[in-house]
Image (cartoon, rainbow, N blue to C red):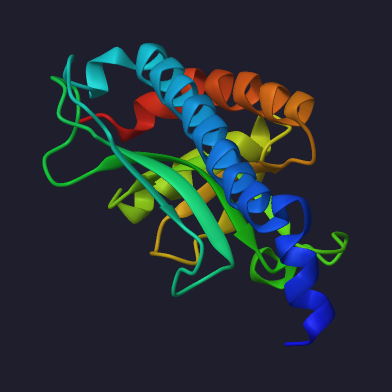
Length: 180
């Protein structure tokens, strides 16, 4: 560390401002993910039990990827299959090569969803329906487990809002595949 670097961090409280900016960004992303999660639940209410509080987590240094913000919502509604399925809505920061996205310079910002612990045949049917329906939804293997990820790369608030609308419509249309 150079003297200039330390001095610049102290000048005008730059270090403290950077910490506050990180906290503010994480709080705003969490708020967006909570709204996204609720819209997904509303799109397939029979897959979820009312009143459950989803699990929220942020990591700046996960084992895989670069960073993530995610919500896991247990699927325990009357139409949900037995087991430990969870709706996972997220913003994953990934190296583009993890998702075979050589068109992206920098980090892939995958805003999307997956059904954790879903049966492989159900994920396969959703992938087939997605491709047949010509959805504006990207599909990838998941770096964290064996399920498929349905996402859009986002670069702005407007991109996130468009992705939420598209992904909620997608789940409303194909999400019943994950039911009993």
